Length: 285
Length: 265
Image 1 (cartoon, rainbow over the protein chains, first blue to last red):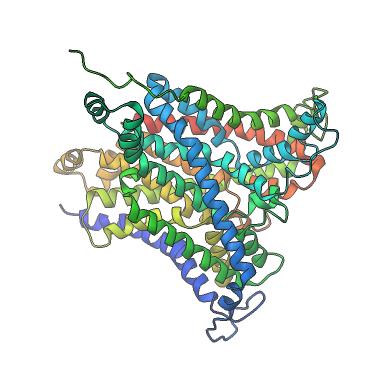
Image 2 (cartoon, one colour):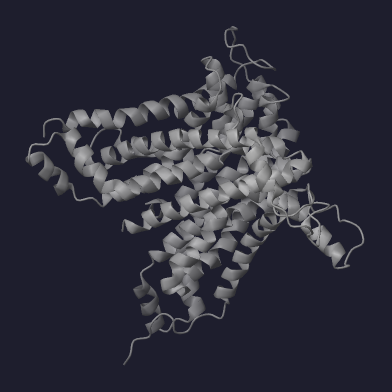
């Protein structure tokens, strides 16, 4: 097969080079920079000696607490989106029958709508002059606007659950489609009732899909800073906002790098734990 | 004896009702925005008053808005094309060859999916400063290529795994070089999936703002422009009108990508 081995180089090299340069290298760089001592923007020509000072600061209680809050928020958002997506996926996989593709498309259209637009929609829903408040007043339930809706942690969580529900349904639906109906028929023949079949067949077999959905929401959410900055106010501030701040207004790149490395490690550890629990590869392909 | 099929003896959970309730939840806020873009008020107040198309007219008079949308199309096109090429190369190499680093290549192409966007954004930001490369639409396109590669690779790996290798062998037995075989046999056979991958990557890029905010120079993409203007309340209706117009485009592309994606199996 003359030429095939040569072709392999031509095929494998560009992906390795591109991802090496623009994915691996930047991550290596950010780890290196997190060990620099500077407390402002960095001039890369300056000489420097490795230091743990940024990690000392990054492990201050206030920052750790914010990390904890952000991880919990992301777990809650991922859990909420997965739980709401699960019955939707179940309906599509087992009840919708030949109309399933149509129902799936209906679900995907909101997801194809601009992410910022959907966040804005919730700002309009929750705001002081927003839909919920003006409806409540119009209907005579309240006399003045309720302030507690927008600019809160709850607003961030509601908005992000809303944003991710359709996406979370996809891997669950894919996992459920692969469940062999013969399992359930066999269980029914052997006398298992519908709930028993659900808990002992459908749930275990769809679990990899649910877990994939959970992490496909968790990973982008834990590093969020755009949504909190639009609907979160000071209370809804997340770890990502802190990082963004250190690369923007409060320029402190080395500390920002250390915080980024910590966030990356936390994310990777959680994903690694999940991969040990369930074989997600069965879902990915 | 007739067999007891599934569909007999369901639980009583109202699944259809749940589905439609979630659908209502998903559509209601968007519908509200849609209505708002036709309302004369710059704040949303019930009951809505005064139908107008002024906001849509203003979209086309706003040069910076149109410019930002154009920038997004350029960035999306470049990022989607590069990501699809990379995803295609990965899938052919991984499915057709046994080599050292094969598992590593699949892992590498999927890995951007499990790195939070803000971490990718700031690390690329530092890289471009480190090598003294000015930030521009090009740097946004580079960042978007990285996050789009996993999507392209997943779609194309699935397609490539379903292709009969005998077709390539036949082409080569008839004298074609391997490159010609790739160009004339493999790529055409992957056709619809390539387009589906490309559209998916384009949509990923077109909507992406968290990475782009770190990598933008002077020219904004549409989400960056939108994000910057959102603090000005009186601009809101025009921005929403533009976003609604673009939504029609992205929804259409998504539906096309979805159809193409389903057809392959």
